[in-house]
Length: 257
Image (spheres, rainbow, N blue to C red):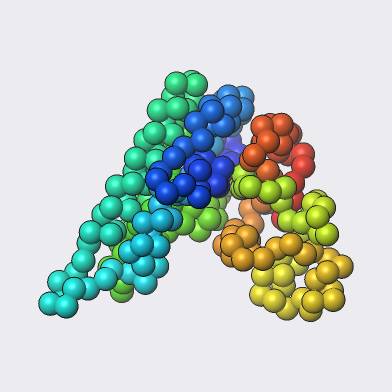
């Protein structure tokens, strides 16, 4: 197989993340599809859940697993609502991509996992037929908790490791890792590990890489679980010029190697 690339599209890029109801950024996705279609090597796309998943996951506190009623009956309502909502997300995005000529095959991580182990054979079959697997953050089964949230940020490095991907691209809201408002072009995995573990003191952090806090710091921690041979690229998805340069030319944003 030719070199595989995995691309994670952030939830705030694919959806209107702050919306009270699930909402897609349709025009942005159409433009992205045209850019992705220019790529001639194997590709896997992963969607962040955004407004289709996060509000429900928070409402039902799915991070802690399944809730239980007073009688001890497992409460599945929240998990099923969330799973159903992100399933709608991936199929709506698939419709947009297919209309633009991008041959995506949508599927849920829940159906390719067994006891936390990913079965990659179906993904290999999809790729072997010249198609593009389209996955997403989802609710998956868990022996201990009943269910758990499996984010796209976790799925991307897991798949990269199992399938021998050459590189991972994260299309985010922001121009990569910033230092005093400016993008840091390159970081080693060791440097990022120190950053997200809090082992860089405040004075040094100011002089090295600031502006990495909260949610983005957590995403960095997830993404460096596995760094493929050609590295991890992080770039801005709010600008199609940035997406085109980052995706096709690997120019702009931050490279983690």
